[in-house]
Structure formats: structure tokens, C-alpha cells
Amino acid sequence: MKKPSNKKNSKHYQKPHGGRSGARMNHSARNQKPAQKSSKPAKAAKPKKQARPDTHSDHTQVIQWYPGHMTKTKRRIEKDLKLVDAVAEIIDARIPISSRNPDIARLTSGKPRIVLLNKCDMADKRTTDQWVSALSRENVRAIPVDCKSGRGVDRFVPVLTELLSERIASYKAKGMVNPTMRVMIVGIPNVGKSTFINRISKKTKATAADRPGVTRGNQWFTVSKGFEMLDTPGVLWPKFDDQKVGEHLAFTGAIKSEVMDTELLAVRLIDLLKDLQPPEFAERYKLTDEELSLPSYEVLEKIAAHRGMLIAGGEADTERAAYTLLDEFRAAKLGRITLEKA
Ligand SMILES: Nc1nc2c(ncn2[C@@H]2O[C@H](COP(=O)(O)OP(=O)(O)O)[C@@H](O)[C@H]2O)c(=O)[nH]1
Ligand SMILES: [Mg+2]
Image (cartoon, rainbow, N blue to C red; front, side, top):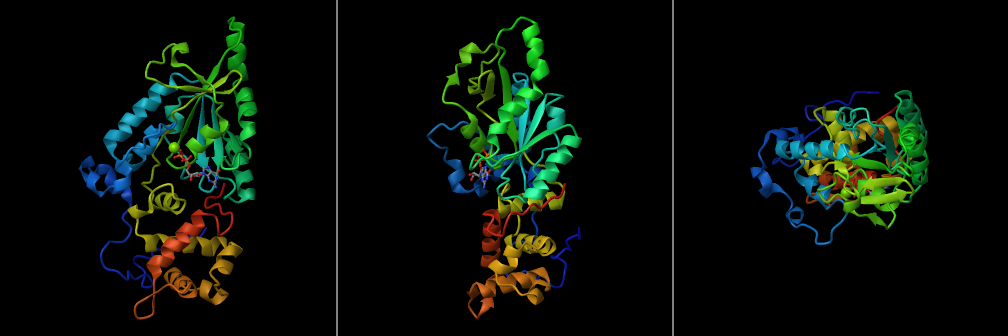
């Protein structure tokens, strides 16, 4: 695949509004102290009244980049892992590389693991199938799912049963009549952990008292007979030391786009779309072949012009066009697009 050129340094990329500097990749935030809190969006500070399965993780989402918190989260995951027989990692089918946390294999220390390729309704179907095969070559059982509609979710229990068959048999051999297998869900923020948990969990909650060793108020959901799931998913931070990974996470909305310059992000997305050529892209923004061959920043100007997004003086409002493009990409209005090939 063509390497995206660095538009920031290119003569074609001009920042129309002075202010912010180019790509402020948030990894610098990793080295900053939580003193930065004031820059958080106000709404994040207000905890939701109603308890949701992962109120916890929704809160950590905003400040997960800070080292102190990362360590705490990691420790909690390590502790919870001791309580489960298997781990289901949810990744985004559109970005199976960038949404997969590289620490998970080590963290789960050889526990049976399932990968759920979620949001496959927005990913290219053929590429998703290729990802399932690629992961199976790594001995990872992968299931494409669309937790929003529920497609594919019914395969979870059968695959889990198969994956844990030896473990179940060994419990039975030890005299346990109905061994209960426990599963933990892990994944980066916004990947669909809550949606999956809500979809798969039956109403009946097992009480913490039934569970030896569970003293921190963990709740277990019955998934199916003999299977329980920890109601609090492990939220793992994505790793984005690599700029491309950061961009892919921002395109899909896994990380807040405010951490990067919106227009630059849109320009990068256009670079990719020019390569992938989903027909919806040209159709939706009425871009001619000639316009598509322009440098990406100029394509963004064309998108603004075709959509009538202009600022005083008739200049293209590329900032508004950038927000629109990113929103529409995230809503899969540009088609089912997988950004990372198997
Ligand atoms: N299109 C689509 N959207 C999904 C899917 N799963 C989750 N979402 C959406 O992704 C967003 C984040 O989901 P959520 O479950 O809150 O993610 P969490 O942070 O991992 O718990 C929500 O807007 C969901 O509706 C899916 O399979 N397809
Ligand atoms: Mg959640």
C-alpha cells in the first residue's frame, strides 16, 4: 500500500487557521500529569447516575492515557483474570491491528482466548473473512460479529464451549457435576464491550456470595448454562506510538478526534480513501476522477465546495468539511471499509 505522504510538510497542505499545531498525537499526553484535568470536556466530569455494567470503564475512557491510571487498570485486569477460565477480546473489524492491544497475550498468560471482530457491519466482508483465517493461523479463534444488530453473537457460546472442552472435561473428571466456566471481556474503549455484554447477558445475575474469591463486588452474568461473564469489562488502552495506528483509531472514533488536528486527520483519511477507492466516496461528494487525483487537501476543498460549505469571502470551509467527512466515515456512509488488510 502506498505510504501516506506527510501532508503537514507538503506544499499542498496549508493550515488555514493559525492556532493549533499540526498532528498533536496524544502520546505526549502519556507523560503528562492528571493536572491537565481542566481540558477535559465538562460532560465527562459528571458521573452517570444510573449504574451501567461498566460505568467504571466509561469513566476511565477520558483519562485512560495517564500512566497512573493505566497501571491501576492493568492491575485490576490482572486480578480479574485470575477469576476467569477464558478471555474474549473485542476488536474493531475495520482496524484489526490498531484496535488489538499488544499486551493482551502477555496479560492473559496463556488463557484460552476468543477474538470478536466487532462492527463487521461497517467492515468489508471479504477482508473480515481474511482476518478470521489469518487469526486462525495464529491459533486464535475469531468470530465476526455485529453487536448492534446481534449478527454472529449466537456463535459465541458454541465457540467458547469448543475452546474450553478440555477444561470442562478435566473439571468433570475431578468430580464436578456442573462446572461453571467464567469469561472476561476485554477491549479498547468504544469497541463495543457494553453493547456485547448487554446483548449476551441473561437477566439473572449470579450473586457475588456464590463465588469464592470474589470480594470486590464483581457481578457475574449468566451467558448460557454453565457459562458466566464478568459484568465489568477490562478496558485496555490502545497503543499508538505509531502515528498510523493513532490515525486509524481516530478515523474510527476509538480515540477522540480532538487529540489530532481535524483537517489533517481528514487529509490522511482522504489519502487512504484514494487508495481504497470505495465508490461511495466519489459518489457521495460528487468528486470527478480529475478531482480525486488532486492532492488530498485540495480534495477536501472540493468536498467543501460541493457541499456548499463556505466561509466569508467564498473560501472553502475545510474544517467543516473535515468534520463532515470524519462523521460520515464513522457512520459507514462511505461504504463498508476495512482500513487494515489481513
Ligand atoms: N455499527 C455498529 N456499531 C456498534 C457495534 N457495536 C457497538 N457499536 C457502537 O459503538 C459505540 C461504542 O459501543 P460501546 O458498547 O459503548 O463500547 P465500549 O466502550 O467498548 O463499551 C456505540 O455507539 C455502539 O452503539 C456494531 O457491531 N456495529
Ligand atoms: Mg462501555
